[in-house]
Length: 112
Image 1 (cartoon, helix red, strand yellow):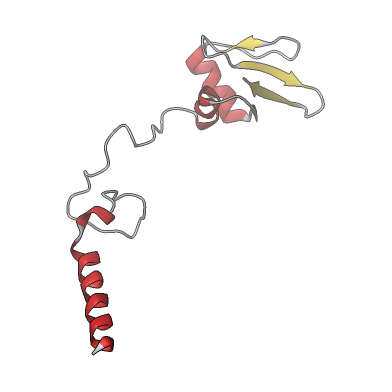
Image 2: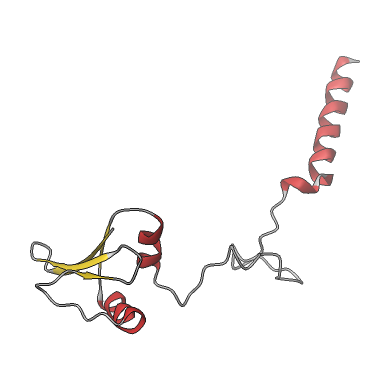
């Protein structure tokens, strides 16, 4: 009789697991193989904006340093109207992010 009781309680928890909808996530675009009829479950504030540069957006949230490549320098020229020079420190608008040339690395660096 005790073995049946344990099996019965296990089956209850198993069936409760698959009928409880709160353990499931509503995200649909986290896996490219995940097919669903309606793909509008992810709210817009969670989605990443592809038009913004991820390195600059990362520095907006916290302090640190990021090395600039050619795509970042082109984005800075276009968005912030800042032309980088090797001898000068430039600020990117009111973000508190500084752009300067690091002679040890030989590249431009973003720092906050």
